[in-house]
Picture (tube, rainbow, N blue to C red):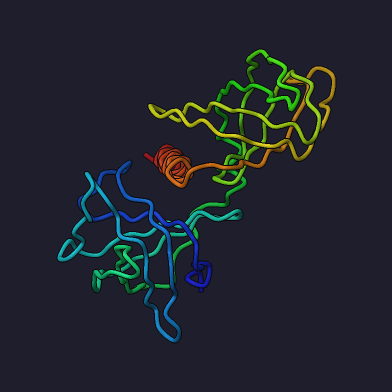
Length: 220
């Protein structure tokens, strides 16, 4: 059952039947209620107000993991407050559907970036350019001609559609690419000190790109 991929801490996109293809809210799963199909999640917020999900019809939940994207149907049960946080209670209505391997989605997700090395000595660094792929809320791969060392701290600017996300990331791995490749180096970076709002921007962008790719892949 794909529903077993839902975990406490998972960030899930919630869509109402009336939402367009690029609409929806990214919310975090707090609790999976034992011996049931019910979950507690942070309530979606819009214009500083809790979004009313009562009587809107069956909800669609999308979960993006390292390996796949899963879609579930859910029903709103209740809204409440836990330790000052607005929480909603949902019932998962099906076992879920695995709609795409993440590897194919990652391959198509390449985004131009700019970045600056932050030297511990305080040395001023020029802004460099590259491309991000394999993007997640926790990190990414960077392709660039700039020679970097593992352990370097980067200030990375990522343009996600109309949104600009600025993140700090430390270089975790370095690979020199073969002669003739588009870029000289590939680096694995792990984001650090990223606000939750920026993480959710990344996740929303990934869901948007994934839906657009699926739409283009459907037979006409």
